[in-house]
Length: 295
Image 1 (cartoon, rainbow, N blue to C red):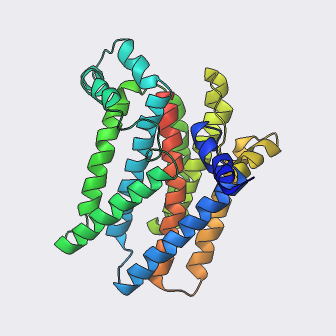
Image 2: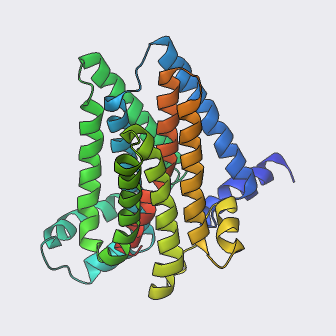
């Protein structure tokens, strides 16, 4: 196989055929992400950037933006937005669908494509976050990026509301995530900064388990896990993706414990905790919103 055939088979075809990830692109994307994170950290070190409460809030606002944009794209790709519009909308959120959906569908700006799915969507959102955060820092307004990301996320969530109907299933991962967070913060007396990474991983695991083992069979929808290792874990035992959920919590708890007891720069520790939180919340929120809208 030549180089272009290798790229086509392992990177291009899985994206356009919606077949998920394979071992090659998983390792490649992970390597790129780690390299990008290292370069970003070097710049943070150079400019003495503090990974404090405001930075966390700004970053998580853009996580919500990225996940909600991705689900708007999913709704277009699955035809859910078109069906909602074509079936005639009613109720409180009908004006949103009647006005906004035709504009979005005609513009094709959020159609399934290189910039709206992995890895493009991560690059776009990371660029927007770092740009708005740097602008806010220059203006002396540490929460500027949080307002920008939060406003974008709120707009996307408004677009999803006319399609939202499976609240019962969506509340399952939310309840599990909040319950674990409350147990860690109020029961085990963990700091919020330490509890959030575990909550993010719990949300991801709980949303995957609910979507594949509960929601999918109930609705006759063929949800599947796109990541190679995660899918292997979910298929390994009769627990299904319940095992994946438990392992995600265990992994995050051990990672947080190790980071809390490691002698290291506090900024590096805070960034590492934030990364663990993001890689949980980003896919978890997407899965949650997809399930809510039935995309």
